[in-house]
Length: 49
Image (tube, rainbow, N blue to C red; front, side, top):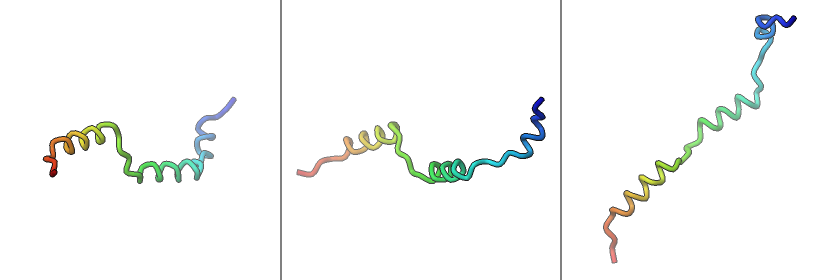
């Protein structure tokens, strides 16, 4: 049978996963809520003609 405790001791995360995680967290991602707030703010600004 598999000894899960022993297998967990051998586990080392993949470097690619760690690198991807860091890259994802360091990005400034704009979501739909951010876009809607920006659109509403811009629509309330007076236009200069």
